[in-house]
Amino acid sequence: MASLPPLSWLRAFEAAARHLSFTQAAAELNLTQSAVSQHVRSLEAALGLTLFVRKTRALQLTEAGSNYLPVVQEAFAILAGGTRALTGGDRGRRLMVTCNLSFSTFWLAPRLGALLAAHPWLSLNLSTPIWDQRQAEGVPEVEIRFGRAALMPGTAQRLAVERAYPVCAPDAEPEAKHWETAPLFDCTGVTANWEAWLSSQGFGLPRGRSVTLASTYVVSMTAALNGGGLAMAHDTLARDLLAGGRLERPSEHSVEMPDGYFLLAAPKHEETPAARTFVAWIAEEFALSG
Image (cartoon, rainbow, N blue to C red; front, side):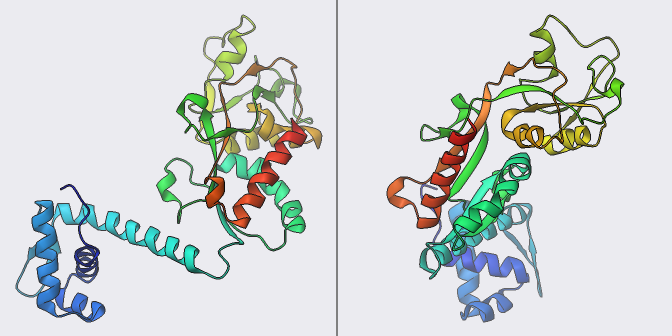
């Protein structure tokens, strides 16, 4: 079908699927039972799919209906959240920011106190979905995304050029500070990894050695912080921990990363005061640390 189904059809389907009853859906929507039933039939005809198995005293979702229900519910939730944000009295001060868990843990969280002290009127909602951005509750106005420039939208602003290098705890045992003897930790899916760092010096992993991988730098760097071995890190995540003496670099050698952190925000004419303030603040923070 070329266009979206009418909202009235989708509302009828969502309520009927949630209650598994046209009668209860009708009571909730202040419609007649026959109106709800007709809306659902119209939706099924438009989709070319059967969404319910109609039994004498109950409804049962078909496989298509079960698959469609969470999609419709998510769409309604996004629409409701966007409407509240648009019409709410505190729209100008509320801000939803999405970033990965590593960035929020090692870079953003340590700076939140200073940000809110300087701008106490800000009301932040920080979302840290690890893989699927659709897990975020609502639509973010600002996103900090990690990846390659070629995969970013044209409006994305690169915050810094990253370099990768090993880090460990200062009080770790001597064997936990050298790559030939220490357990090695890294984040999966990153090209500036242990293999890249070693090969740039003409080395390779010894036979029988392996790298423990995790889906987030939080795991690998926490292992290093606790003296468990060496983690491959990069500037944005490690700079504060190195400056504070919680981590150290056993080698000065580093490799430039093709990946980096990028700032994605709404066009300036659509920015709220909160988004404008946050974007200016984060750009200034990276400029100062660069």
